[in-house]
Length: 130
Image 1 (cartoon, helix red, strand yellow):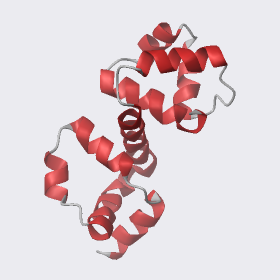
Image 2 (cartoon, helix red, strand yellow):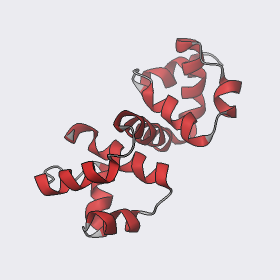
Image 3 (cartoon, one colour):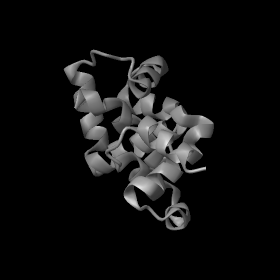
Image 4 (cartoon, helix red, strand yellow):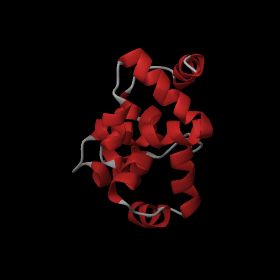
């Protein structure tokens, strides 16, 4: 679970529409710990904290939350290159971009985050399609 923790926490926050402060309050941790969890810089969470996160997210699909978090992260990391990622995804996986863009925001990011390809490789493919 620890390797997916950053995407799980981010995905949960995006799914619920809560702020980092609200999530920190629900986990009973300082804001900087919640932020570090999302960034993946909080490397050794206690068993107690992991249990709190599991309890907080237990009503929702674990894998969907991770994919949503990863989808948001991919977009943030790629920034302006995200458009090349989408083009590359269309080429590599046959994803219909019009259909993808018409999906609700959460579903869009869940699909983006579920792609099992290196995002930078997909960007390179997308750049070559110009």
